[in-house]
Amino acid sequence: MKRLVTSMLAGWATAGVLLSPAFAQAQEVKIGLVAPFTGIGAELGQQIDRGVEQYLKLRASEFAPYKIKIIKRDDKNPSGADSKVAVQELLTQENVDALAGWIYSPNAIASAPVVSAGKKIGVIMNAGTAHITTMSPYFVRTSFSMWHSGYALGEAAVKQLKAKMMQKFQMLAMENEKTSEQQCIHFLTQNYESIA
Image 1 (tube, rainbow, N blue to C red):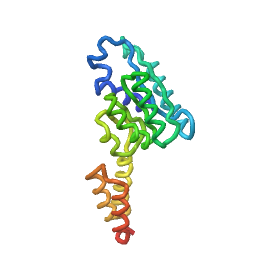
Image 2 (cartoon, rainbow, N blue to C red; image 1 turned 180 degrees about the horizontal axis):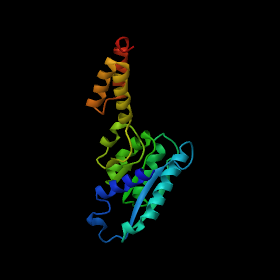
Image 3 (tube, rainbow, N blue to C red; image 1 turned 180 degrees about the vertical axis):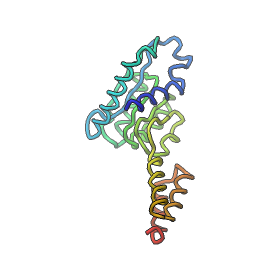
Image 4 (cartoon, one colour; image 1 turned 90 degrees about the vertical axis):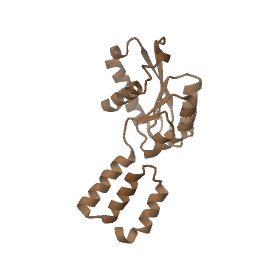
């Protein structure tokens, strides 16, 4: 969690959120945190929230003269609809300077057009679908993508199980992070005999 929050804040700084001329006169930086605080993913949302709060408490002096204000919105479930509304509220009603969160991929995907329209950086803290960061020029990722674990599993299958077709499948995934689920299923069904 510490690494996640450190990466998140480093991502904001790298992207210029805290260093841009727009903040030269501002003393308060508002960051919208979109995570599930109720429902099935509430524990993940609470962990991220606690990590952010703890990090900001321990390193408050590093942000001087700025005061970081976290404004939370509950995106409840992985449907995407609640997250999109939460992001719209944060951008239009709260006028946040940056966004963070997105536990579930459908929520980040649904929010991408809103993040782009709002022209504010969005730090993806957990959503793992590989191509999410291509959906908005304002998205950055501080966690993992499914490609990371999939590649490692494919590499192990090739080395330990001598799975030659898995090696081809792994190369397909490596060449194009945008490889869709349908393309993967098609590849596997077309080559099932030789994989098994």
